[in-house]
Length: 420
Image: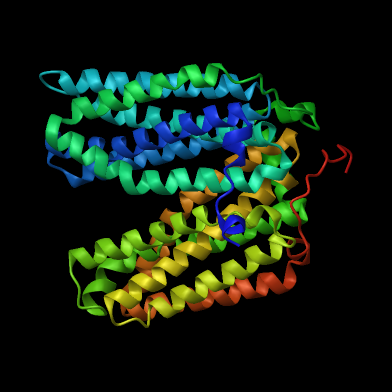
C-alpha cells in the first residue's frame, strides 16, 4: 500500500535527460523566487513608491504571458532543446545585468523595469519549451509521474525560495541575491546542452499558420475541438476563479478567526503544504484506471472544501481545510497535466502548454478581481462560501456533462488528420 502511494521517481532514475531538465528547472524556480523578493525590495528602496513596485511586477507578469504564447509557437517549430538553452542563457544574462546595476553607485530604476520584463519573457519561453519537451523525455507511461515531480519542485520552490531570497538580501544585499541567481541559472546550461535534439514532430496543418497569430489561433481551434483537452481547459477556468481566494484571507483571518498576521501566514502556507503532501503520495495516479473521473471528483471536492472554509471560526480548522484543499487541488493539477500531455499531439504541444501556462498564470489576477469585488458586498467568510459553493456546483455540472473527460485515459493519441 505504501509503495503504491509513494511518489514515482522513475523518470529521475531511468531518464538522464529528464533528470537534467528537472535539476535545471529546480534551479530556475529558486532563481525566480529570489528575484520575486529582490526586485520589489530594491524598487521600493530606490523610489519609496508602492506604485512603482506594482508597476514593475505588472511589467514582468505581462512579459511572462507574452513569453508563454510566443514560446508556444516557437516550441512547435524549432528544436525545444535549443529553445530552452537560448531562453535560460537570456535569463542568466538578465540576472548578470541586474547584479551589475545593483552594485552601481546609483542603480537605475528604468533598468529594473526592463530587466524584470526581460526575465518574464525568457521564463515564459523556457517553461513552455520544457513542458512541450517532457513527453519525449519520459515516455507516455511516466507523464503523470513527471507532472508530480514538476509540481513538487514548483511548490517547494514557492515555499522556500522567497525565504532564501529574503535571507540573502538581509545578510548581503540585493546585488549578491542577483549574483547567486545568475550563477545558478548559467550553471544549468551544461545540463541542457547534454540533452538530445528535441525537434517537434509533425507540423502546422496550414502553411498560413506559420504566422504567429494564426498559429496561436490553430492551437485554440484544436483545444476547442478536442473533447478531453477542451474539457480540461474549461475546468481550468474554474480554478482561475478560485485563484482569487487569497485576496480575502487577511480580512477572513481578522473578522472570522480573530487572528493577526501570523494566522494569515498559516492560511497562505497551508495549501502549499497540502500540495506537497499530494505530490509525495501521488504514486497511484500514474496507474489510475479512470484519471478523468478522479480529476473531476478532486475538482468538486476541492471547491466544496473552499465552501466549508468560509464557515470556519477557528484558525486550526481553517488551516486543516486549506490543507485538504491544497491536497485535492494538486491531485487535480497532476492528473490534468498527464491528460493534457497524453492527449495532445506533438505538433501542438508547445501551443497547448502555452495556453495552459497562461491560464494558470493569469488565473490569480482574474480571480483576485472577482474576489475583491465580492468582498465589497459580503463578509469575507460569506464571500468564500459563495465562491466555493458556486464553483463546486459548476464543477459538478461539468462532471455530469463532460462525458469525454469522465472516460478519458492516459493512453497517448496520434497526430490528428490535418483534414479533420
